[in-house]
Length: 210
Image (cartoon, rainbow, N blue to C red; front, side):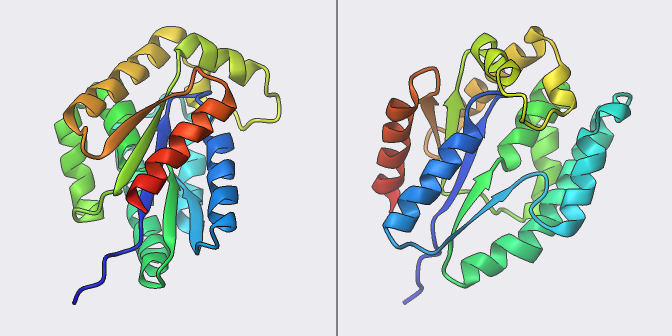
């Protein structure tokens, strides 16, 4: 009998949606459940991918072409998957992603205008069909998200944070488009609510698949 692979969850959302806080709370929940897991981020997660992240998100490279940006993220994703994610799954660990391929589909495919299908095809070469079992999309009003960023001076600021409200509204529309097209995998969590309610919804979805 073939054993089912450990659960793979990605957390997605626009800037200021609360991903970092939610992921911290998921970690606390899994620790209480005595589950073996890793939490990792994209772009990044391993040494090479973190170096690519520095270039792709650096504010001083604002002139970067959209396709160059997409290719960098795809390269970082491949290295991350091969070096860290697949070995963790082979060891029976749950994997929690802070962003995965849906971010590329939204930010480069939808918002930058390359095309969702084009970016997905590019990523298929890198991930070879690998997708999360569950993607939790933290849906927040872009105005609220930007207000949260402004109130958190310790947060890493990258070039995406410097975009205007219209950009972030388009990001939200991109995620809602994916939600409508992949409802079997992507679940919307109302991240406009207080943290307690958000976490309750998140844990409920995880338990349904555990």
